[in-house]
Length: 232
Image 1 (cartoon, rainbow, N blue to C red):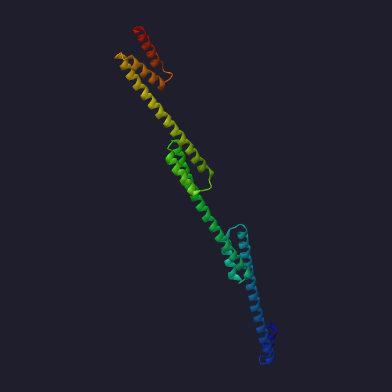
Image 2 (cartoon, rainbow, N blue to C red):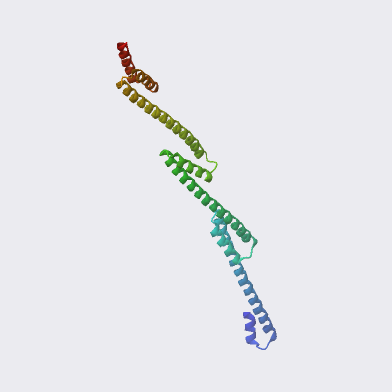
């Protein structure tokens, strides 16, 4: 270009150097544009590769949100299939994670509700409030039907209730016998005061039947026998 320009200073009217100068200038301009385009493409490739490297690293560490942002940035520099496929994978993984988190939350809620019922049931059981304990253990089983502990406790409650029923029956029977013994002794004592010895003896024998180990009715029978012998 410089040579053609110099030639034109010597012979400004010559067409040949003018034409060659234009051709050279056009070629230079074209080469410059091509070089700039290549540089711009290389810069985009570098930016694309940098974003892909960041995205892959984040993906490998399960940092899916960061990976998604970098793959999306990569697509700004190159409309390529690889980041698109990785973005689809990320959406699947994020959906799986969301589902897992939801399951974990539901499980945590279930565990908390079950533990609450078991705690209330145990408190009632320890206080021997078996009816309330039974209600809470059954409620716990509606939350976790396969748990063994509340089933075991419900069986134990049945045993405890049966034991209590038997103890109550025995106490009631004992109280009945005590009352009948006391009534018989009171009647026998009165008959003895009235010197109705035969009836008194029969009544003391009745009392002795209620309490076989009691000495009092036996002593009173012996006393009556002594009186009857002295009279005879």
